[in-house]
Length: 173
Image (cartoon, rainbow, N blue to C red; front, top):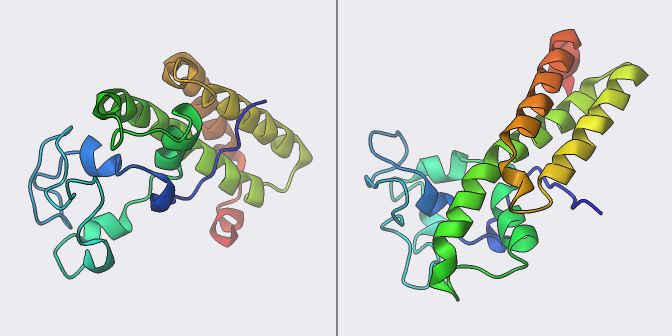
């Protein structure tokens, strides 16, 4: 059975993947510059954020505004079975690669969820359920999460659906 796709981040079930995967040079809300693949300078040796409770005051408001739509915890909990690079450093690179591959899938799952809330027509809801099933299947393994063709087809379907939705319904959802 395909895993459930959560569409909200839960940092407590992740492994600071966003804190490593992305660069922060010239990005507002990040007071320290780092390259993609480098740990944030505010990550401790244990892989936990040393300023989590006061990120905004420390110049890291971008961290509080960032939303992975559940990609981080999905990678750790589903694709790596709860294991992470903090216990096994050899997992760092594969986890970052999986996280970067999972992000578009999570983004699309969030958009499908929002469209489902806004879709007034049963036909659209049926198509959205199919997109949701496809996204859950894609998110099911390290191999399928990299299937750019399937991901692109889901994105195209969502673009068609969003084009037919009333913007007023979207604002209410």
